[in-house]
Each structure stands twice: as structure tokens, then as C-alpha cells.
Image 1 (cartoon, one colour):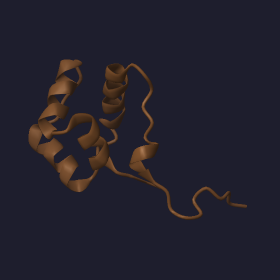
Image 2 (tube, helix red, strand yellow):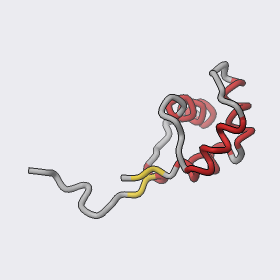
Image 3 (cartoon, helix red, strand yellow):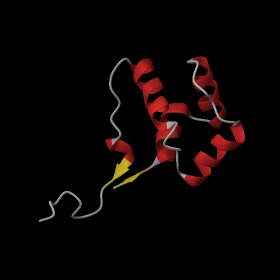
Amino acid sequence: MTFSAKRFLVKNFQTSQNVVTRLQAYGMPAPRLAAVDKWFQRNSIPSDYLPSLLAIVEIERGRPVSIIEFSNFEAGENEQQS
């Protein structure tokens, strides 16, 4: 399975500046804007920040967030290993 961080970020935050602003608005530590720009470029969110971003989206929507729409499953991944 792969996770499209960029799709998640664009859909829920639109811009790097919005990521930084919303983290700060909720009293969470925020990285520098240039660092968040790289998240968009690299299609990757550091694991220290993903739970905070998910929490922000859940708080603002008022319901749990599913990451399925941002995930790609490879053929055979759901098959159990014996």
C-alpha cells in the first residue's frame, strides 16, 4: 500500500501556508514553510506530523477521517501470507 500525501494535503489544506497556519492555530508545533513545501514536492509527510494533521481534519469535519481515498493498494496485498 502507498499513501498519497500530496493528495491528502491538497484536498485538506490546499497550500503549505495553510498547513503551517492551521497547526499553529491548534497550538501544535509547526515546521517552517519551506519544510512543508517539501512535503508537497516529495509526496511525503513526516510521521511526527501526520497524526496532528489527521486530528485537525477530524476536528474541523466533526467526524473521523478515512485515509483509504488517499491509499493505493497493490495486487495481492490483501491476501494473507501462510
